Length: 259
Image (cartoon, rainbow, N blue to C red):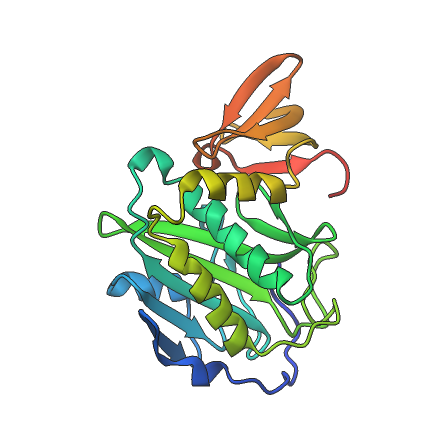
C-alpha cells in the first residue's frame, strides 16, 4: 500500500462503504470515517479475521515507511488480519498472493490487471493498487490494501483509478469481494501454495522485463527479470549471472524505460 493513491478533494460518488461494517462470514469489519493508518490501527489489537476500513486515510504507510494520503470517499483503503499458517521461508508469498486476490477481484469487474513485483497492481502499466504486509503477534499478517476507486485526477501519470477506466463500483462491494478471496489464507489442502504461486507468475508483468535493482547501499544493478522463484524472490539475470532479489533487500525494482 504505497504512494501514488492521492487526489484533489472532491465530492465522491455515493457508495455503501460504511454499511460493510459488522460480521461478514468469518470476518469482523470495522468502519472508521477517518484514520491515520489502518495497518497501525489493526496492529493495536491484532486478531485473526479482523478488518479495519476507512473512508479517509490521511497517513497511510507504504514500503520503506513512505507516507501518503487519500481524499475522503475516493479510495478503498483497508487492512485485514490473517493467520496464513505458512512457514517463515514462505512468508514472502503473503504480499504476492494478496496481489493475486486483488487482481482476481478486479477481473470480476472486467478489469485486466497485472502484478508488478513485489507489491503493486497495474492496469495497462499504470498503478491502480498497492499492498503492504506487516507481521505482528508472531504468526499474524496485517495485509494493507489501497485501491484507487473514484479518483478522476491523480498526482502522477504512472497511476490510474477504476473511475478513469470507466468502472463504477461500490467500495463496500469491492471490499467484500477481496475479503472473500482472502479466505484462501490459511492455505489448506484445497488451496495449495503451488497453485497460487503459478497464479502469481501468470499475472506478474515484471518477469521478462529489463529492470534496475536499487539497493540500500546506493548501487544499482541492471538485468533481465527471468522468474519469481519458489521463495517469492525475483531472479534477475545480469550478463549471465543470476541474482536473487528479496523484497526486503531492495529499495526499488524499476523497469528500464517506461513501465
